[in-house]
Length: 275
Length: 269
View 1 (cartoon, rainbow over the protein chains, first blue to last red):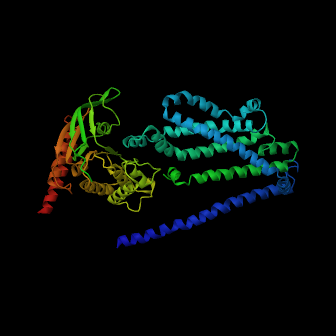
View 2 (cartoon, rainbow over the protein chains, first blue to last red):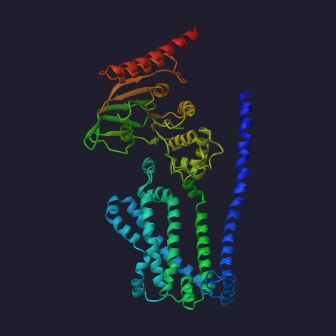
View 3 (cartoon, rainbow over the protein chains, first blue to last red):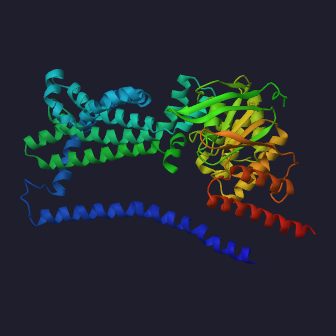
């Protein structure tokens, strides 16, 4: 008798999460939309009542109008592609060098002791400090921006790869020893899969830094790109253009981060987030 | 199944080990007979796990050597499975690399049926319960006709009921596939229920103070006379000789067993 009653009690508990999951999804969509509309409304009110002068705070209407202008001129798409290209090159270079360096440091305690202070020093040095050197060394064009992106993302990537390698539970290496894994197999079949979830997180974080840096990097030494767009808008006192460039930068950054977030759903990576 | 456990050898010959100067094991000599289930018991910190690491070859002894022949596999307390591999991939790690694809698949299927996890092949370890995970570890260790299984408190992280179930399953599995087993545990009852031979370690540096052979058929119950007698012998050996306090505790435990024993006898009558 008791067992039967107990089972009845369990049933509604199992159904409930299904209902809440639906409402959670609905909330996930509707709540941010409400917040954004509130913000737009406040912006609109500020403009209507001329709290700030029109040249210092462009109205939503003016921003929309300039967006149409820029899209017709094709400059916005051009700038976005230029920025994305620089990010891609700089970031791939940083990942291609930073992850192997992190792997090597993670496996060698002696090297770790020698190099970690240096890496930390450069991690805390703002990449923007390199701007004068970037221009002197690489002149004008894509190269200085790519160099700055590289400097922004290499150090955090190398350091977080290193610490995730160093934190792999030793039991995995003991198991690898039991099953006679060779040294290359240990890297490819234990170390890499074990740190993959943390690598994805590190990529997301350092990509965030890189995306922030690209705007500043393009303000100097570039003739196009989203950062250059803002710089030029400022020079022409066209803050309406600057505002929609800002919107594009934020939205594009978010969209790419969502792409990285999709990686965490891969079955080989998901285990690291579900434990 | 081929009977290859007669080719396996596991011998400790006057082995000593120490960690940075402080001795842990001293002059230990044991011959683990092929097909024998040996339990190592003793208080925590007495060097049971060190002994197991020596047997698995993970560490080398400071003096003399360990004779290890045959395929040796270790089963850990928990988290020994690779969390990025699904159940069938984890088990396949243990299979011999020389097999053809269809042979591998066949052996894999056999093992999954053996550990009663049909339908869970595509699950990741974090999607399984603790007991299921230990069963997968067991299957991985059994794969590829391993000769010697080293088990480091394999059931200690499980809940009580699962632990009892797993003990029973281990006995069944070993009846189907006989192996030399070295089973480390701090649970004296577990050792008595499972093992053919119990080695009791004590003190530091540790030595073997009792080498007990238990010749009783499976399944065993803790209430069997032989089991109670064995537990008594082991507790006797482990009780500290000096302080009266500890003596009382051990005596109390003994008398508890005696009471249990009496109750059972009454029930039988």
